[in-house]
Length: 167
Image (tube, rainbow, N blue to C red; front, side, top):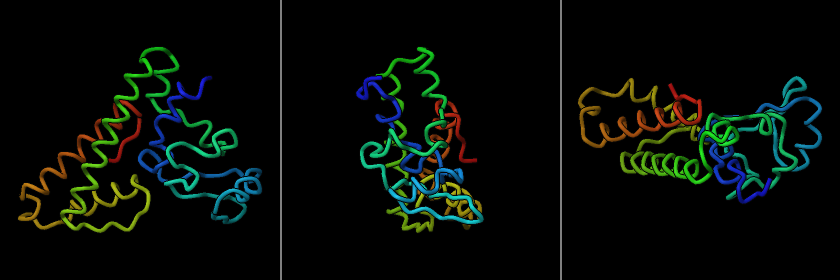
């Protein structure tokens, strides 16, 4: 396939930690993957957290990526492969998710909400839990309402188009 038409390389939402929080490695992958990136190994199993440090405007190890990465197929990829959705429409959907993600990150900065996770996926899981415990008077402010709305819209987009939910 022509890389310019590879929806995965155009997207990167699984690699940047939006769709997936971590990648699990099979024992036979540990040696090769550990040569190109830092991984955690426990009891013969390995993982690395997202965002992947080999992703920078595209996967830099795409042809040698781990098995979980190679086998992951979101709904959007399936739709493109089944010709139910054209490449340009898929890219528009990806861009809409990236814009919503940026909006959420901007609101988090304005509201000075500090989350511990590096992975955007786990940040959103952490945020959902945090929002459930905030004081009712805070949750009624416009900034918090906009953040909650953005979070729900992002979850809807991820669920409908990518088959991944934050809730």
